[in-house]
Image (cartoon, rainbow, N blue to C red; front, side, top):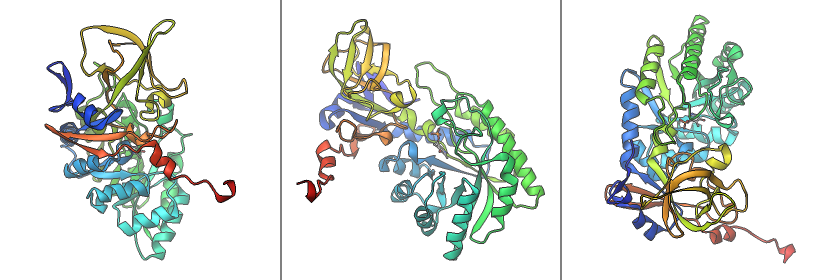
Length: 419
Ligand SMILES: *Cc1c(COP(=O)(O)O)cnc(C)c1O
C-alpha cells in the first residue's frame, strides 16, 4: 500500500497535490512519501515478529537519500552499505555504527580501514582474498572485525540476469562447496571474528522458493560448520523481496516471507540480519514528469516527457516496467510510446502502452520509482541531476537539490596547454 492517490481528480502524495510540487520544484522530480516508507518498515518488521533476535538493515543502495535514511533509521532500521560513501550517509543520518553491515565484492583497503575506524557492526566478506586483507588491516590496528562469510549458494533466483547474484558464475560470495574450507582458514586469523554466514541471491524476487532453497542450504552449512567446531552466532539472509510494478500484480507478501523465514530458521539459534531495499522504498516514491510534446508516430504517438533514462535508468538497463499515469486524468485513454528526450533509442520507458490520454504540458508519474531510481541517475546528455522531494502529510521539502548541468560543467577544467 502507498500514499499516492487521486483526490478530487488530482494525484496527491499524502495530502500534497503533485502539481504544487511541480510548480515549486520543477520537473522531473522524485517524490517520496514518509508515511509509505514508515508503513513499509512496519509491515516488514511485523512480518518478522516470530524471529526473536534480528537486525533489519535497509539496503542503502536502493535509496541513499539522507532524509529517507533518517526516516528509516527512526524506524529502528540499520543499514546495509556497499561503499564507504554509503556508510558515511548512514552515519550522517544517525544510524548507529553497530547497526551497519558492509557488503560488496570490491571493498578497498581504504574502505575497510574507514569502516573499522567507524566501528561498524559487521563485514560480509565476499572472498578468501578479502578476508585475508581485512584480517591483516584489523590486526595491524589492534582491532577485531566482526564478520560473516558470504556464500554463493548456486541458486537461480529466477529474476533478471543483471540483478541475479546467487548463481555459481556470479561474482558474489564464495562457492558453497568451498565454504567450509575457506571458513576454517579465515576463522583462525587474528583481526577477525568470523561468527557466521551471509547470502543474497538477487533482487525483485517474485517467488519465495529459490530463497527457501538458499536458506536451507545455508542452514545445512551452519550445522556443518558447527560440527567442525566453529561458533556460529549470526546469519545474514540478505534482501531481494520483489514489489508489484504493474497494477494488480501479486507478489509474495512480507508476511509470507516472514513465515517462511521463521519456519526454516527456527532451530538455528542465531541472530538473523535482513537487508531489504526495494520492498521498503520501491512503492514509496514516484518520478513526477511533464509532457514536453506529443509527436505523431507511424503507428502510436510518442509521448515525449521531460524525464529520461538518465533520471530513471531501470527501463533502459533491465527493460523494467514502470506504471505510467496522468496526474490529472480525464476518462480518456491512449496507446502511446513513452520516451524521454535523450538521443538514444534506449531512452524509451514503454512502447505501445495503454495509458491516460496526455497532451503537451500535462503532468504524469512513473510509479514504483522510490528504489533504484534517483540513486542510478547520471548527467548523460548534460541534463544535470534530478531533484528529490519528501512529503509528510500536508508539507513537503526538497531533500536533494537539482544539480544543474552548469554546476557539473563548473567542476571541469580545460588544461592550460589547450588554451
Ligand atoms: C542490493 C542488495 C540488497 C537489497 O536488495 P533488494 O532487492 O533491494 O531488497 C541487499 N543485500 C545486498 C548484499 C545487496 O547487494
